[in-house]
Length: 150
Image (cartoon, rainbow, N blue to C red; front, top):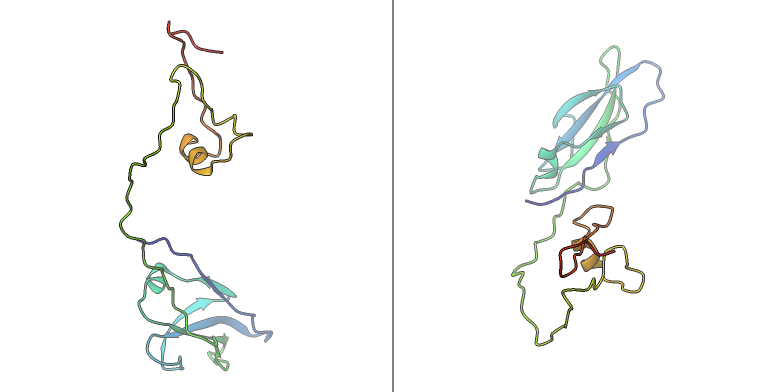
């Protein structure tokens, strides 16, 4: 599963007064023509591309025409280049390995809370401690007897 950007196809509306809508043409094989597949998109100047178009494994050519109240169609405006989403290959073999280094931590003392980040700049630790929230997570520490530390 990949995360892909959404795209919006847009055009400058025809300045003809009798335009009632537009036809969006597309072709997956060759340059788009009037005999290519199309949908009527209404009297709008943009359309979000559906997921099915974004997931195609080949380029798509687009063209747009204006339609008037009598059904006449304008010249076709075509995209200069075909559209295709290029999703990068995923990284492989994510591993976690122990290092030969050690760090001494006093389990009775607060080493660092997410709110005390001024002197330490560690974005991974900050992200993990904040649990992905925009606010840093507060941690509560107790003394040997079980009373909350202040």
